[in-house]
Structures are given as structure tokens and as C-alpha cells.
Image (tube, rainbow, N blue to C red; front, side, top):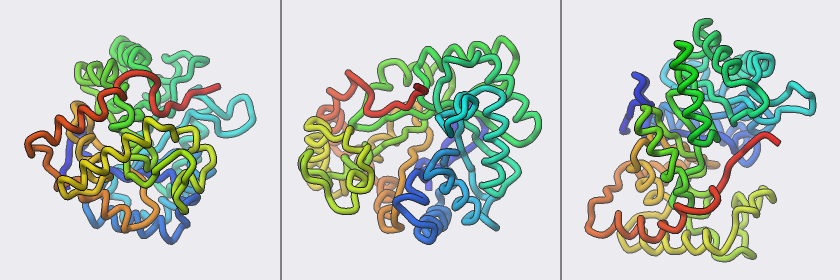
Length: 325
């Protein structure tokens, strides 16, 4: 396994991380536990979840699966997206974050979070309030590092500036949709993170499975796929992304790789990317993703061809972004 520093911190994370959005939803507890154990045995030390995944089941499953293994894992969770119907069950106010941290600690069966992330920018709460709350969490020992998610470049830069002005701990990482199918972070977020020493943690690195080549048209949904299990995912299926998935598959076949592994290898090689979180619903799927670590983009033309077929995805709307209503 390859390990990298997360931003300019001293924390080292595996180049491939484990995303757990499917745990408790598309993968039951037994399957999820097997995936976690296989990931750890394979050298993956970064496990990412959130307080809302599978209606909190993801955190609970991870907490049980990590019994006796917690010390070897960099555990990351998030709060800030809508948790419930109440007026204080969303956002990054002190009230909401403190409540959600305690709930996450209980479900994860741990007394500290390695990376606590604000799930999205909150336009209704002053950044000073959020950042001072996170500082208090670090000083209490319940949080070790802090990160952001779904922040625009200007929002993240504003947060870093406030932390510097007030002498607070800074965000060391940010999560963003980033893949061959979504290169919009390269316009502003990537240059900013390189300048400020913030590590990028891409989510949807396979565009929800589209880059695996499993989708041949918008009307045909493979049985057991994400689009089959989650009707909300259909909004991501369009002719452009499906065509890119097919192009990636042909290129991968020509070089003797799977499309998923090749897509992940390309993303790991991008500037500022620290760890790529990819989900799995079986150990076999995880094993296929692990092949990305042994892929070199050095063969003549491979890097250029991947850049060329995905170049249009640098512009337009992000593949995915999650914001407060």
C-alpha cells in the first residue's frame, strides 16, 4: 500500500481509502464487516463515513467492525447535512455539531475521531462559530484533525483565512466530487489546495459506477447496480457520462486493465489528491479497486488519452455537489 500525507499535516493515509455510504443500505452488516476487515488487511487505513449514511447504520456497523482494530485506522466522519426535520438538525452551528459529534462517537464506539469534516458549507452560520467549535473539539481530544466537504474554493479559502487570523487549527483536507467524469475541481479548487497545503479527498471517483463501464445506455440499468438500488441515482445518468464510461472501458481493455482500476489510478496521480475514497458492496469489488495501486500511467499515450477523453468534463456543472437547502 502507498501512503501519503493528508495535506501539509503529519497524518499519513492510504492512497486508496474506503467509502462506506453503501454500508447498511446496499451492503448488509455481514458484507460490510467483511469489506472493512479485508480493506484493513490490504493496508487501507482510511475509512470515511458520515452521520447520515444509511440513516446512521453505516457508523454503527463500522463501530462494531473495528472492535480490536481501531488503533490502526484513520477514521473520518462528517456532519452538517440535513439530519432531521428540526430547525437545529442541520448545518454547522455549535449546537448541531456538538450534538452530532457525541452521537457519532457513540455509534462508532470510539472516544475520538481522526478527521471530523463539515459535510457542506453552511451559509446560515458564521464561519467563526463553526471554526471555534471545531477548535474546542480538538482541544477536548475528541477530534484530531478537521476537514471540509462540498466547499467552493472561495468558501474554503475564507475559512482558512479566518483560522489563520484567529490562530485556530485549519482544515487539512476537503472532499469534492472528482473523477474522469468531473474535472471541475481543477479550475479553482486544485490550485487553491496546492497553494494552501490542503489535501483533496475525491468522492464519486468512479462517478457512482458509471466509469466501470457497466452502463450502456440511460434506459438500461444493470441488476444490482447503484441505479437499480437507488432511484435518485438516475439523475446522474446521461449520454455524456455513459459514453465516457464506454471510452474508458475500451482504453482499459487495450492496456490490460479494468476500467475501474484505471480510472482510480488516473485520479490518484492528480495533483493535491491525498486519498481516493471508493465504496464497495463486496470484497471482490474492493479487490478489483486495489488493482489500481499497481497501475502505472507511464506507457506512452495512456495519460494523454485519459486526459483527452475526459477534457470536456473540466467545464460545466460538477457531477455531484451536496448543499443545504
